[in-house]
Image 1 (cartoon, one colour):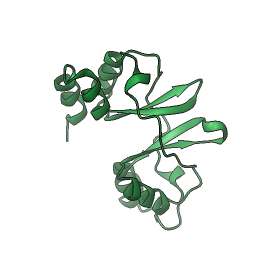
Image 2: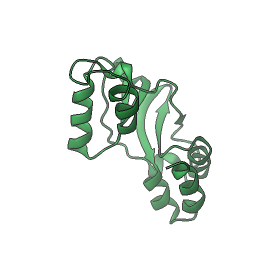
Image 3: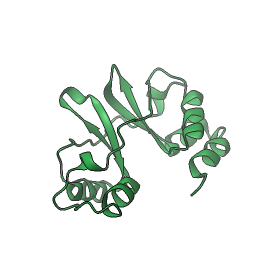
Image 4: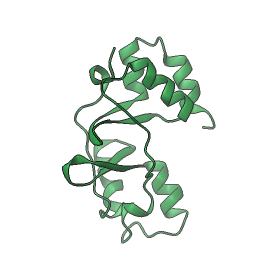
Length: 138
């Protein structure tokens, strides 16, 4: 199975100049812990997680009311192609210890693949190994 078949295709994104508090509100509204950061044309330049907001922003002294997400986003984003195999995505999640992968085509965001997407798509076949990786240290 290809990543394209399992990924979420409707994905909210944000710009690096948006305030951290606005990103946090978007996460709350959408019940999401992961927001891709894009430039014009949907070019992926980073991601921000709820953990990034706590650790890289609040705990580091940034003001979420005035500082932009650029201060706390992860810029070296782990991505996958929509044409890659779902098992390859699962191995990447496990080895990188991440729960979500931005799916890109020519550098442009086209979707997000979550741990839950992998579990559902594979009927749990790869779930145990992936879950070990993404929960390591949790």
